[in-house]
Length: 287
Figure (cartoon, rainbow, N blue to C red):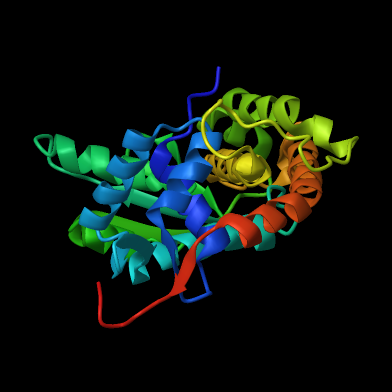
């Protein structure tokens, strides 16, 4: 069973969809209404807004008695990376040139926290553990800033490499990454969203996820959940080369389901956003 989407993930997705690249801020009440339709309560939404401001991911802007929220440089960079991952790279890696990035590290036994942090960052960047201190990722992955951020540059070595001609790359991939788990995430996504490939929704045809919130915002809330779920799935995928994956690898089917659902929901979502969201231009005098 898939874990629930975190409110922060939903909020970043919402802002990427409605705010990124537009130099606007969105009224907190609009966020609360959309999230209510997505099944997230008002208190959880307000708490998420506050936490993200405190973490430097959002900026506040007061207009009269209303509080609006916009992006910071950091959150905008995170969202542009997500856009690139969804719309440029995609879920199926057909263009791999045979290059691997190898990262070796040796940390003192007492550095348990640093080891945990490094491994977490490596997984996020698409690496898998070839051996205990040697990790591997397909393609040329830039990791110098990641390693420097953790203060581990002196303990890490990075190489680019190609497999020997006699190497069974498919077997290595299966031993290094949890392919069945990753495939399961794609298959679960297809089951939830494939119905949109065969139907064209009409106004009022998309029920909200809860009985709270303005039902006119339901298409926008549903597309928000679609995008956030899809980004969560592909963030877990290191974009392994498709020619070394099982023939029935489900990433292509899942991406087809995502694009079909996105295309069918977008007209209704855009209409409700234009009519119902309260947006104001960014002012440089507030942060």
